[in-house]
Length: 462
Image (cartoon, rainbow, N blue to C red; front, side):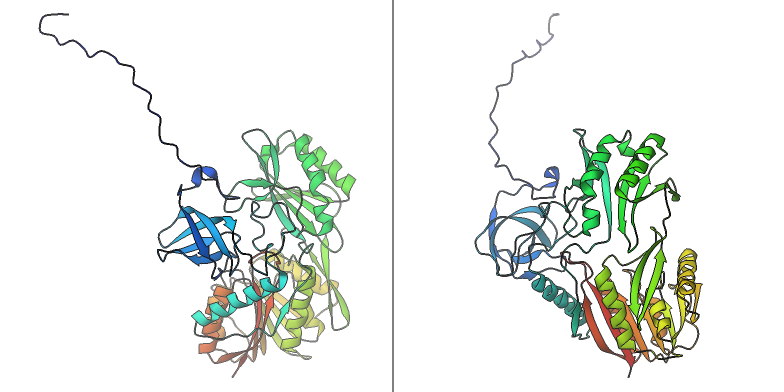
């Protein structure tokens, strides 16, 4: 070392300092542990009401709103916050001091982890009351009132005839088949699903065994199970061709009497075996109607409730021979065929040409010559022609543009089938401004055990 150069500091091994121990905060079911915002405090809350998504709502001592998973009105609970938001917090129950009289034991062992159901812990009658209240609240926000006279219901389990299951391989190499986890994109492996139609639920265990045999399980995006009145079908979304795995699927179809179809790449559908002409039945005006559809087509998953929905719509509209009816968002003819069977002259509009062709085929199959149909973008195309009644069954976005036009037209009756109470209330307000009044309404419980709500509403000119 040269003169004047400073000696480098001596390396000293740092002394280990024991960090203060932080209490472990477990993640609630379905919430990824690494996404939990640790908060050691435990809040004691009283649940005031249910939110529209089925979570309990309480008020923290600070005044902040807290959404609590799987908590019911009137229950006193100890909770831990797992997500802090700007205007509200999200929490899960760590202890329940009192229980609601409406609380029941969930039928599914995966409830709370699986994201498919939100209300299995709530008695069926209380589920309906909650959904009715949600509908009322949405209408009140628009300055309207609604009093559903009835509820269209079915068995609370075993009703679902269509389901999409994800396929995934986790970090440990486990092959998972199931729905998305609660509030997550990850797959929750399931061994049962009580809401599925029994003939589909029985396929779960054999499907697990098949997934274990696949050479390329990561090439399977998802699997869709369908039960029609005349057959069962499995649609496999595959990222690329896998000939060896296709042979396994073919054997599976043979063994379990299931039609198998692949959807590859950009949507090309390839039937692996047998016919895929699926169909369901409707009974209208002392006639049995057969409606054919393909796996990619929209159809209502709850057979019993759909039959009630169609019959109630026809009863409330009460078309007679020669009544001119416009059926919007017509699908494969779920309402068109029943209307035509009662003697109405039906013109159906649908956004997809393939669905229009399917609807016309169904009309011909059932010997109904009072049906015409065309393709139309119902967010842009003006409603033309003179009609005495209109039926519309739009997607979740509702039918704002259509209702703006109908509000200006002299249509006697409008039957609106909604899968979103918020957009229904918005569109109802538009119709009310145009001189329509709500005369009939029903809660349509198409999806028991979930917070999903459908509604049938009929409006008439004042």
